Each structure stands twice: as C-alpha cells, then as structure tokens.
Length: 270
Image (cartoon, rainbow, N blue to C red; front, top):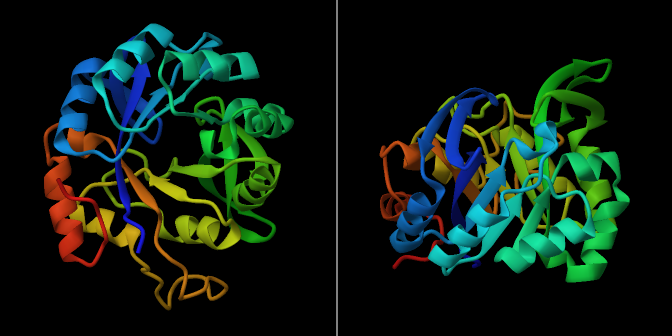
C-alpha cells in the first residue's frame, strides 16, 4: 500500500506566509523560511509554496524566497503562483522546485500543460484547481475559478481535471474554496468525484480543522447520502494539504501522522 502524504502549504504574499477563510480575510501566519525549516524537521512528506498574489497582481513568483526555502528543506518542494510560461517553470526549477503548480495560466492556455510535460515530464506538472460549488441547470456542480478564486471560468471542475490530465498534468492539487480556512473539513464529495474521474494522484486541500477530518479525506469515506454515481470503492485522496492547523500551532506533523495511522491510513513515520 502506498503511503499517504501530509503536505504543509505555505501561501505566501509579499514574502510572508498568510492564511484566510474562503480565499478572503487574509492574515499573516509567519516567515516562510522559518516554517519550512520546522516542517522539514517535523517529518512533512512534501512542501507546497504558493505565491498567492502572483496571478492577480501580475507579478513573478518570489524566486528569492523559493531559493531560501529550498535551502532549508530536503523533501519535495512544489512551487506555484505566477508560472505562465516554460521559462517561468525553468526559473522555478532552477531556484529549487521539484515540481510546479499552475492554475490561472493553464485555464487561460491549456496547451501550457502539454508544453510543461514535454519539457520536464508530467511528474513535475501539478494542476491546481480552485473549485467552488455552484447550482446550474444540471444541479449541484463545481466550477473552476481563476485569479486566486476571484473569477468563475464557468468550467466544470471535474471536466477540467479530465482534460488537464489528458494534456499532461501529472498530479492535481484540489482546493475547495467553500471549505478553505473554515476548519469544517475537506469537501469529500468533490474529492471523490475528481478521484473517480482521473488516474493521477490527488492532493486534497481546504478545510482541515481536526485530525479526524484529515484521516477521513485520506480514507474511503463514501456514504449513502452522497451521489450514487460515486463508486463506494473509490480510494481516499493521495495526500492532504494542511495549513492553519500547523501554522497556528494547533497540532504538528508527527501528531497528525500518528493519529491517522491509528485510523488505518498508511503513512511514513520518522
């Protein structure tokens, strides 16, 4: 059984780690280099660095901060925000990223995913989907949003995930705008839909408030009240992104791993 991953997420704006609720109400959470060092030493499986201001403020990823973070960690580092071209991807990789995450730029020009996969391999290409629940003529669905959750593209998030994987995305970072920062738990239904629709690893993001919620998103938690089209045999997410719980000292990596292992999740323990 493949081990599930616990991935701290550093949302960075103007060189500082920040955290909000549903992509709004941003508040400062610390220094990215200091937090990266702590999470690396605590046993995180990977680290995700997202320059959340890069897309809508039209500025480049803070590569100097990326370099400093990369110097502190000895685990895979994913960098996103402001990656618009192959040159941007190359700069991020040269700064120390092991893979890059794209959201708005891929929505604007999906062919970018193919170009990135051809240049560096699909294992280095992470599609970030900022998804929000909407009610359409077909009933409940999720739309993919761009520009840091500010713009509704009208694209069905599941259909976009399928297309993106066909183009070259090797992993999906699935961000629930509805759950982000609420502590109310991950969007399990959205996560299962993406898992059932695509063959690549899925990282669940948004809503972690308790250790049990982390365990649930990593396990198969299908239930009768969920959409009957979702297979009860679908696996849980391949990884869980965690931010507020860690940044504000509510728990730590080892406590998370020991708890979810007790619930049947296969994890790497130090």
